[in-house]
Image 1: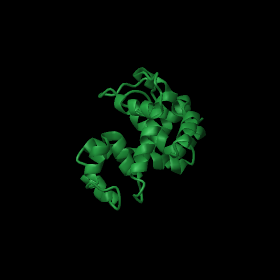
Image 2: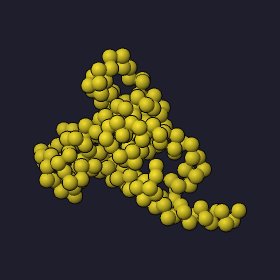
Image 3: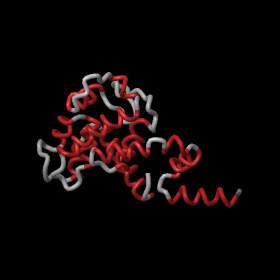
Image 4: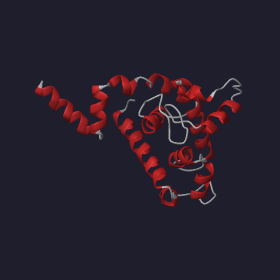
Length: 187
């Protein structure tokens, strides 16, 4: 038993996030129950599933019933406004905001919205920080932080321009989590 604990401790430290690894080991279903669905929906929207999972981790810690402080709902904490845009764009006339508590619906709307942000920032060498800032704070704020341009803005400068500490921390934490999943080579 001691050897097993020592082995786990070694792997947890090597993972780069021992606390997460511990919780994942203790309750694997919670941290992996949406992996298949994330992979499918991310592929439909041309996003890396590890990035989508990092957003889910940051937004809800995998709780599909989570309510946000500004009315966001579900795994990706999708706002009513963003969900309405998604439903309108996809011609879903029967959409009701409480459907955002359904993991598939939430992931569909959230990845659609995130993909749209990636498209806006596609000319950047690394569009992820820009798209994540937009996902968190909205397109108009992300455009303000970029100086009104969607091309040739150094990431460092863009992150420096973010005057919402919460958004800057949000972007950093998702990129960190994304890199964690990439290092592990699996979701």
